[in-house]
Image 1 (cartoon, one colour):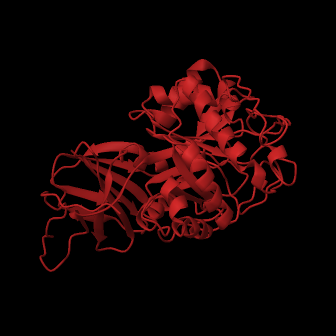
Image 2 (cartoon, rainbow, N blue to C red; image 1 turned 135 degrees about the vertical axis):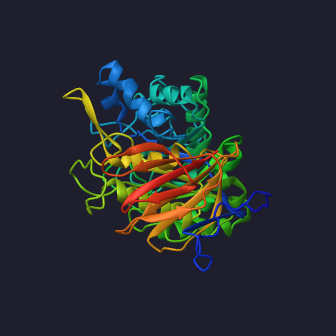
Length: 437
């Protein structure tokens, strides 16, 4: 929790009728979490879909992901640390140590192709846009390190292979460093409470805490991340186990959880940074709509981001994939084209304007239909995000400063308009982003 006091006026002015509270009040004297950023993953060989597009369209897609003027201005890229491929898109990246070197104490035999299924290419592109947070996460250790002998189908890490697995993860970061990419955040498990037919590996909360103590001293200079549980409520047990062990707590800098099994409804039990590190809605149908009640539309994504920031106090929000059927974009390598969902613009309304290092401010809304969050950026600009979930417009009088309102709904994707008369009309079923310079 970030705490501090600044001598800056509140953003809510008294209403015309003094007996009526302002529609929105932002209190800069009460501060909450610091923001690390917003991001996507392109693991499981999704970058191959992007590379199949014409170069001009590749650039357009990268702009939509990372450019702060044309797109979402994302600031985190999550990379998948590989396992041995069999041709399925769910057997993602080529492992840097595909074969048993002869035992846990044998000299490792690492292999690096400089490409990592095009993840290096996208990471370099993201870095050119200014991205500085690269989160490398492993779905599984190589099969020979596990009790089931396979990188797929769950199984657990053999105790005698713990140090070798830690070295394997750190070696991955060193290969990226040679390519000019600094891995800033390193995760050793993905959904440790879920057995998948693709690359997966089980850890109990206690086992995860134990392994964090092995990885931490080896991975000095890189933030250790844990534990990417299948659901946010389920992640609380992993966080609690790490917090209960002083040595594990020393090394784990960021606590993470997904929201497939349960949504963000409260903070994780830690004072460390927390990230919602993976989610996309269910479904097998491409959806470009803003508000259709499907749960996979842009409005649903906006609500999920708001809840993560305000109910969970998360510092980072990482959407699952940048490009696929349930992603922000649909990349069609057959037709050589792409399509944009309103999901992209729902996330962009937050990610473009709320920058790394921003601090969330306390807010209040007179109308319960308004979901409000506010942030102060390192450059002094303030961002107020208002999702009007109701069916009637709401007028906010009292916006101080030179302000621009960006509207996102079925017909608009961050459409800007100057705020005049210190008044903003918040239309029903819309997301309005107010940036105050």
